[in-house]
Image (cartoon, rainbow, N blue to C red; front, side, top):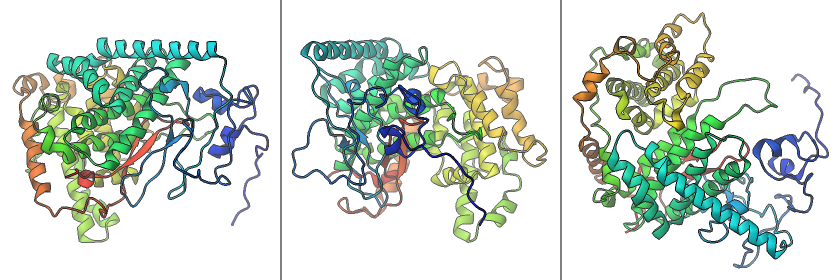
Length: 516
């Protein structure tokens, strides 16, 4: 074994970096990592947080825990789970923004330990001032959501705009605080798109989402019911928006000199989570006057699985050779083949009607096997993903998708050699679309008469029928014991990149079980 490269160790780093086990640059009065994530550093304020070593702390005894202790995210029944420390949600008076949280998930199976203690209470005038400031921030975020953000969560649908603008806030503030916190977090992120360096908005987007995920996870772990089905669906949808939008704020770690592109797998996990919630709550959502219009706004998912040549069928070329090279048993061979064929069928469907919002369906409808192929960085899976991001070019005027097509396609292309005769030609179309200046792309460049196809494809109940079919299939399967289900590894919601990343584990598919 070659000797390890010598390197300088950080001996006097700040306590936050020590807890997170990352190298601290020891810059005063605030280290680089704390400055990057907009959080307090004990170099700057030594008395604010008494961060303790999580490996030497003993768990709290007794049921009464201080309100300042981070809340453990209840773990859904799963064979793999993590805990997330997050500030508690306060919907009146002080908001979650007052407690900036930067803790990371604890080790699997370990008892979460508090990472800070409440400092001495500040003078009354200071506390009152902070409370007023937080209330004003919440009013600002709510106003922005209802007047601006709500219009960006649908594609040219006045009915959906009214639902997001009026109905969703009413539901949030009447029965589901986690939905309210998610709503405020998305609004803060929207405002950050025009003021990316606003520290107050950065803290708000992190803190509200951390609070929302804590309560959302707790609700899922208790089981879904008729009373929380709508709120859970809307929260999962907003988390998916948040996960997607967070990508525009991600920056390369200054300590990472490799400059390597990282795949946005969190997008798939978040939208797959929406699908999981829909599957688990469909018996109630099918009657919802809030959710059904959102689902019906999508055109019918008409996939061509006939095997006839299509626009993207060349991406399947050489599939037999790949399967022979990587797969070792007939079951995995079939699963991989179906995963590729289904993903390309969804691309072909969305390619015909790109301005209807159809491209977003790809994230929720691809199979778990395709996501695994992406994680393995299979070239074919990467080229399919590049084609998908090219479809998002048509939605590039939406704030949470602005610049996505060009950035992600160029990132994927950087993973290939320019002299790769097999895959480089298949990246030419995504590159051509990414370099186009306008979001309205001529049919001769796009490769299909999208205008004619869109005119002949009106939103209808086709997508609802698709969900009904899947629901009937799953309902005919043997039901698992809701107390001790035998779950496969869960998937992950990743809300934000970087040091303030918030993630929670949620089960796959119907593994979120309804309560009888």
